[in-house]
Length: 179
Image 1 (cartoon, helix red, strand yellow):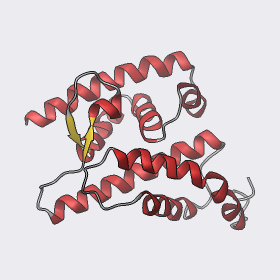
Image 2 (cartoon, one colour; image 1 turned 90 degrees about the horizontal axis):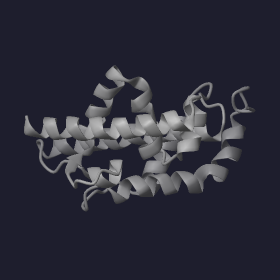
Image 3 (cartoon, helix red, strand yellow; image 1 turned 180 degrees about the horizontal axis):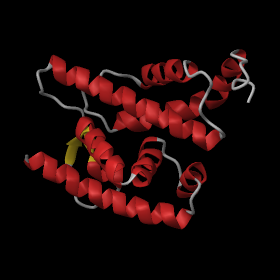
Image 4 (cartoon, rainbow, N blue to C red; image 1 turned 90 degrees about the vertical axis):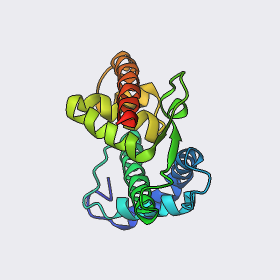
């Protein structure tokens, strides 16, 4: 709350408290990247920190909401990094995520982070709530209960939408890969 009231030093007090959790999130994302990925978790956390610190006023209301926003920021950074890498390689060597690991789907399929991001954007057009649930569950690593708290819906609705969104993303990414 102090930061929201204009106390910029409050961020310096907050960051050591959440840094370990942000590093855990960053390590989770980067474990799923291609093996020759050069972005390190520390760099991802620091880039996210710079973007979060640049928010004026901060957008979050509580701890779960903060990590949801941090996850979104990290997603944006990874997608930007993947696009830059693909541009350098002229389309080759896309950053790979295992859809299995990303979305807990039984069939193992490799998709690139850009395809996942594009599919999430399309899902957001159809169902913003489901897109937000995927972002919070996958990118932020929030539990069903924390996701429900951030969005303001019941855990049962989160579970139902999470299942539906995973199935939709699986179909959408598989369809896009055939194009």
